[in-house]
Length: 406
Image (cartoon, rainbow, N blue to C red):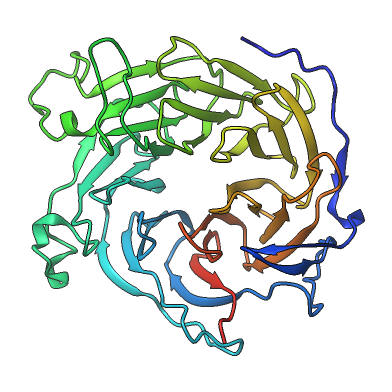
């Protein structure tokens, strides 16, 4: 079903937005609505500070939190895969000097190409990665220690213990991956188990694949390449250009994809085709969907676009609510906060912006700059249960950011 969306929303430039009072979790604080090239230094602006900085020799494309929030995984153009310990934020002062994070695992040449995407399974037992070498790799992890099962809890051998499983079914760069969050009947004969099913998408044939990771771990590698691997549960077509982003937001069979074909699509794995096709806010010739995210109640789709715009789409009403431009370059990452009241966006303009979603979403939205890198920001990810976050950048760093606690 394709919605008839004829009304083009006005694009709100954040520089014209008024100040507004909103909450930082539950307690009110003021956010300055003006976003400019100069960071807002007024006293009411949340002052996030860098807590740790991980440095690499090449741009760092992807980051993902462990479900507990205690760890995070990092994938780089240098082909390194790392697992880092998230820092304690107790006694964090405003004059804190950023330190290097504790690296629990470091894998060199993990892929043959750059690591474009990384995801942690909901139970913390699998790290999945995708690359421009067209493969996906699965590594079994100890969900408690955050190092490979084969290391038997010994961090000294974590960087070599355990063999990753390589999956080959894409014919182009794997741009994004996402684990499903619960069990669901995906057909009359197949029922998923929690943490076992992985969505993947990218360039090449622009298909979205659903993979059973349990089957993949027992797949016979001697099977002829002409035989489709039995771990691919489903292949979904519809996009006509590279798929840049996938969003899974709650247990069930729904997910959203965003593509360079200037559409986003809402999928239900129980249906043979997308249940909703969302064209770009500016029509058929609109800007690519570089990143998509859906709030937990499945009411609101937020998307970041290559023309520096963020758009808000009502999934239930099949209509656009708003579109605004808080950045000056491509918006490569959008994510709802754990409470869904704030949107974190990151851009090639080197900035991280927070948008406050309390109140009427059709009106100008208050925004504030939270952080900045020295080069393009590729991803920003909220901590699973608090208002701190991590960012990855072309400046070859990953930074964890938080508000001072003392």
